[in-house]
Image (tube, rainbow, N blue to C red):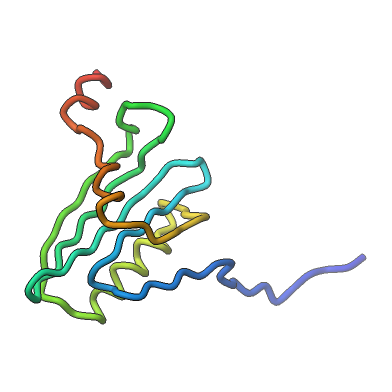
Length: 120
């Protein structure tokens, strides 16, 4: 009988981002739901918008949907941390991630008031 041992966690994927301060990351979790992180820097201030999960097949909010916005002074170290936390959040459980255009990412923000009314 063979016993496996010395288990080591290893990243299965990587994502290259050219400009930390101006990017949009679309992440997909194990259930096919989409999560978004948008970073936009203007005049030394970085705007951070994170939202999801969104189920692409339905126009209602997923019960665990959250949207978060903040603004901070540009810092590569802090932006690296934001991106790392987004990609490696165990609650999200992202299995895929890709960089998309910021404008495309913004188009996925649900019409929250209508989605809220539809979910009642």
